[in-house]
Image (tube, rainbow over all chains, first blue to last red; front, side):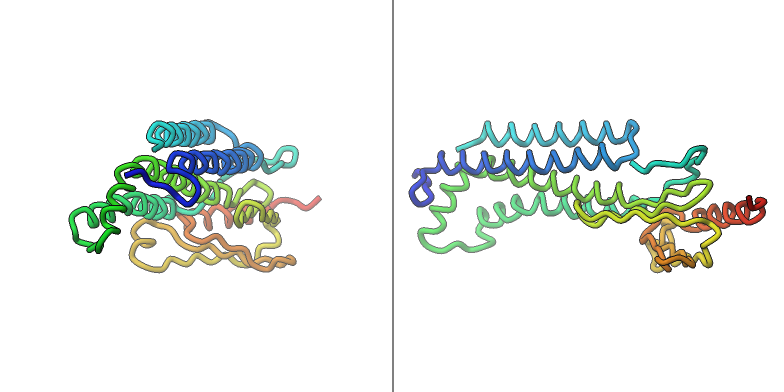
Length: 69
Length: 179
């Protein structure tokens, strides 16, 4: 059975949700990276955190994209 | 980044104890597995789903579970880093001339206050409970003569060491000849 939400079918709903998630990620990432670079004390820790954060975000986005119904 | 005066050196940076972040990490981890537990409970019939709803739910879950769970983890990942940023930016910077108290309340509310050692009147350390005592963290209060009469940092790591450092620097400042 295909799942649908109102006027949208499942795939369109998933795509809209995915685009919304990308917007949220972009806004959150800009704010976070701005704070780390502008107010942080610099050093290796922040670079490491930035790398881990971005790697995690990209992994989850990729997983969501691949498993999109 | 805090701008230091010429010749000013950072002696110590005080943050909340890592236990605070550990608590957040455990909470986020529990929330992360919550959908899996709920799903398992529905599938095993522990949570009874009546009538057609069961079939609809099973169909929707078989199509959507990986996608929805990826987005759920993404949301929690961001939430954890927001929490970490708050932890990281909420700091006391103890220099050889002053204490800089940076209070980060959310993302767009930040208060930076500086105190000279000669204005400090009293320093109190408060350690309450079993875990703070065992892990050596507590609340540090500094009473000052300035406009902001008290600053405090909750769950500060090694508060007694911080107190000793501040007292030593204050002693040095008081014994130095005034220009």
